[in-house]
Structures are given as C-alpha cells and as structure tokens.
Amino acid sequence: MDGATIYALGTPRPSRAHPGALSIIRLSGPRAADALVFLTEPGAFARGRSAREPVLPPPRRLVLRTLYDPLSGEAIDRGLAVWFEAPHTETGEPMAELHLHGGRAVVGAALEAIRRLGICRLAEPGEFTRRAFEHGKLDLTEAEGIADLVAAETEQQRRLALQQMDGALHRLYKAWRTLGLGTLAHLEAAIDFPDEDLPPGLDQGVRDGITELQAGIGAHLADRRGERLRDGLHIAIIGPPNAGKSSLLNLLARRDAAIVSETAGTTRDVIEVHLDLGGWPVVLADTAGLRESADAIEQEGVRRARARAATADLRLLVLDASDDWKTALRMIVAATENWDPARDIVVLNKIDLAAAEAAGVVPLSARSGAGLPDLLARLEHSAGLLMDEGAGAPPLTRARHREALAEAHASLGRALEAPEIALAAEDLRLALRAIGRITGTVRVEELLDVIFRDFCIGK
Ligand SMILES: Nc1nc2c(ncn2[C@@H]2O[C@H](COP(=O)(O)OP(=O)(O)O)[C@@H](O)[C@H]2O)c(=O)[nH]1
Ligand SMILES: [Mg+2]
Image (cartoon, protein in one colour):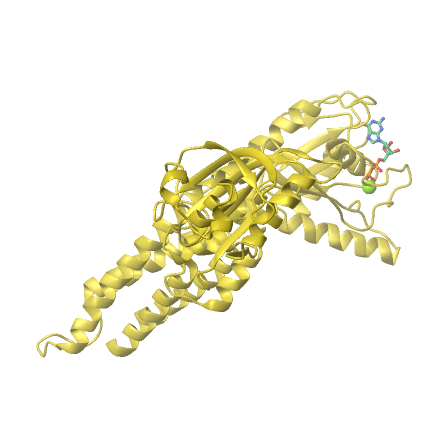
C-alpha cells in the first residue's frame, strides 16, 4: 500500500445505451477531504489552500454541492457529496463520495476533474477493500464475502455471502486459532519447564485440545454446502433411451439446449445448463440413455452418464410411462452408484400417452408440461435437504480455505502422533499458521494480490 489517495467510479460506467440515473465516485486516503473541498468550493484549488472548516460538510451527511473543474472553474454537475471522517469509514481512511447524474459526459468530466487535482490516483481493482483489510476493518474471509455478495446470482448465494461478510467464518476460524494457541502455550510451558515427575509425551489437556481442534476442522471439511452454493448443485438426468430426458432438460431450462429425437441414442455427450431453482444455483446435466450398445461412441456416452450419475448431488431418473418402466426402474437403481431413495427423484414421463401412478414417483408430461409444478417442488425439497446438512455452522466456501484446512488437519494428526513434545509443538504451530493464512492473520503478499485482483475497480 502506498498511502496515496485513491478514487474510482463505484457504479457501472454509463454507456450510450445504458446511462444511469446516478453514478457514485468514491475517494479514500489522506487527501480525500482536500479533494472534496477543491472540487466543490469555487476557487479553492486556484488559491491553493484547503480551508476545510467552512466548506467541509459535517461527516456522514449528504449535502447538495456543485462540482467544479478545478482548472477552468466550470460547473460540471450538481449532486450530493458526503464526507466520512477516519477511522470510522469503510477503509479506515478519510473518505468522500460524490453522487452525480449518471451520464457519460458527467462521469467523464468528473473523473477528469479529480485527476487534474494531481493529489489522487485511480484505484486498482479491490483496492478499497484491500485498504479496509490493511486497516483491520475486516479479515480475508469477510473480504471474500464482499466479492461473493457482488457476484451472487441467486437468493441462497446472496444469503451465504452476507453471512460470510458479516464474519461467520471469521468467528469460526478465530475460535479455532484461540483454542490452538491456548493448547500451544501449554505445550511450550511443558517444553520450557519439564516436570521430572510426569511421564514424557503429551499431557491429557493438550491431547484433548488438539483432538477437539482436529475434529472441528474435520467436520467443516466434510461439509460441501459452500461449494454447492458457489458452483451449483449438480443434478444428473438419467434413464433409458427415449424416456424424455432431453425433453425434460429443455423444459426445465425453458429452451432447446439438448436435441430431442425419436431416434434412441441421440444424446451422447453430457449437456449442462445452469438454472436457479428456488434460489439454489443448479447445474443440470442431460446424459446419454443407459442401455447396452454396440456403437463405440454410444458406449462412451453411457460410461459418462454413469460417471455423472455417481458424482452428482442429486439424480433425476426419467422413465417412459408407456413402456415397461418398473423393470427399467429396478435395473437402473440397482446399477446406479450412490442412489439415495430419500433425495433422488423418479419421474414417470409421457403420462399423456399412458396414465400411470405409483407412490413416490412424480408423474410428468415433458411434452405438455403437466406435472412440472410438482416436480419443481420435489426438486426444491431435495435441494433443501442437501443444503441443510450441517446447518448451523457456516459452510466452507472456497478451495483456498479447503486447502489450508486440510493442511492444518494433517498437521494436527501428526502432532498427536509425534514422538516428542517439541515435534508436536512444531506441528501445532504449522496448523495454526495454515488457519492464519485463511483469515490473513498470517500475511502472504502474493495471496493478497490474487484475492483482491478478482474484485472490480471501485470495490
Ligand atoms: N407423448 C410424449 N412424448 C414425449 C414426451 N417427452 C418426450 N417425448 C418424445 O419422446 C422422444 C424422446 O425424447 P427425448 O427427450 O429425446 O428422450 P431422451 O432420449 O431420453 O433424451 C421424442 O420424440 C420426444 O418428443 C412426453 O411427455 N409425451
Ligand atoms: Mg436425449
């Protein structure tokens, strides 16, 4: 961080096709107040002074101001200005905001006016949030929560991101660090002041502390909700050829994503569409019909279908009601790895051709759409069941966290097995360092660059 005063447009840049009603420019840094005065008090810049007191608005109050070009003195726009006094600001530095009309020329002239002051520079992507981190306003998981909130596309993603931004993960990881540090202090005391009367090795209190920490991290690692919410819940549509799998995918996607044909064996590759199902992000995959085939390409399609069915979070088995569906049901369920009767869904399609009903089976006509509301309700219910697992604790949301926690978990395992307490202490220290990297307590510069680079400018 160079301590410069930075500025950026915080709202989307207005274009000819999409001018905005409003645009907001933000400034942060030691000269934010000077910039605000120079831009809003005619002549102040030319006089080269920043007689702030009479013109600087009271902090955190929106005030009506005309924005002037500092060199020509020409009025650019009239809008609202707000001044935030450090350290109670988002970045921890003095900050100012200009709320202007969202026109291309207005925003262009305003940004140019700020540049001409010569006391600020344009912010880099994520630099406002990075400064907040540098000033201890948030930890890395909270910063990542902000990025996720901006990127959230569904209701559930938004909820999770907000939780994380509000410090749910921060508190969890901090509690682990506190537990680990306490245990380490015990261990170090035993190294510094060995008690001759006690048997060598870890005492029970230390052992309990490490075990508790390892169990907590292990449970968190086993929880896949966060990844499901970030990347989408994977649902595989499986079933015999011609049952209407591709028709169902198209119906759910509300477009012709997959080829529908009377010719059995049309779908060979896995076709994916992304959907929002009751707030859950979903990746729906259409697969090849499951049957024995002499055709090498179709065989490969069937192999991929089986693999996809096995790794999916949920399976939608589509059967043809006008066919011998009971036999197909039995055979496919028996051949499908990870089939879970509580969550996976059997769809009896083509009920327009043959009326069929059976307990636990969802009747549907992919052709007419009859039965779709019930199917959607079942899907949302199953998705809810999946996402409820381990509810209460905040879920793990990033591969970065997973890697560090897996490392911590392994180090703790080694600590418990260590032949000497000095070695156990070293392993415990490694585990704590790994946890510290997640929150940023342990700083890794390259990591910070990667995290904040993904933000937009002005955030
Ligand atoms: N009558 C009727 N025909 C359907 C229905 N769903 C699909 N089909 C037809 O069944 C054939 C196979 O459909 P398709 O979606 O390609 O099946 P897939 O092989 O399982 O992907 C096509 O001719 C569809 O038009 C339905 O609900 N009712
Ligand atoms: Mg198909």
